[in-house]
Image (cartoon, rainbow, N blue to C red):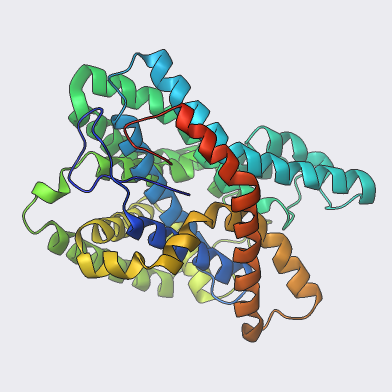
Length: 374
């Protein structure tokens, strides 16, 4: 994905948002964590997805704040048309290929029961269905559904808050949501008889990461003395607490979750508690601040290879799981097979980017925003 990012502090409406390569590099690291997890090497895929959510909330809010002076119909039309051209071509092409394959070969299993969730971007609600069965071909698409649902809810909030109270009111709304959403999710799970792991896919479980990133977009971080030092200190303290929690806690049994080890179980437990979940959000907010303010980090993550990997990370995420199945069937799931899996995943994503996605990205120029190209 391509972004143009705010390099100063919280943006004023309709302010130009320059592109910052380091955040594409950050996205590359996040998708590599997902690939490591799905290759059964290191169970850190959840952290990769969390990083994506925080970064997406940050970038989307910067873009939205740059256009809030437009009337709402124009504001909404431009945003949703640009989002559709970025996300829909690859996503629905992938779903179409799965659908045709199922009609011809009756594979992948579970497609018949899951296609309504897939085409409607509600795959994160599918585990609530007692008949639901996971499939490596589409189980990972729950996170894309979560983002799409956030894109429906959050833009009207940003426009209304910005028009009535400016960026500060948008930040206040993001802060309230970031604090209350983890608590509301726990109360929801306690009040309703929901499998605790199936509930982990619900939007109430993940919107707080997106609103946490949105909150950062509203904070003038460059105007805060020693902002980088404060964020590093926060990340160190919270990160240490999370490591301790991961070592001493185990995940509850569930029909949809089997921890791969103490780290996987500990991360699940931490992310299931309001304080632990908020702590993870703070860690990744600090990581984004570091990318923006710390020049050595920005230079390291701004290297051309990492930037390119970040630009094609959407395709990498959508398409990587079927490759993993091929690697498993070939018996290449040991650690020596991972570099070849990584190369194949990014090669496939690159082909998707240049042949399918980029023509639609060029069409976005018909719907300019203060953010340039995303």
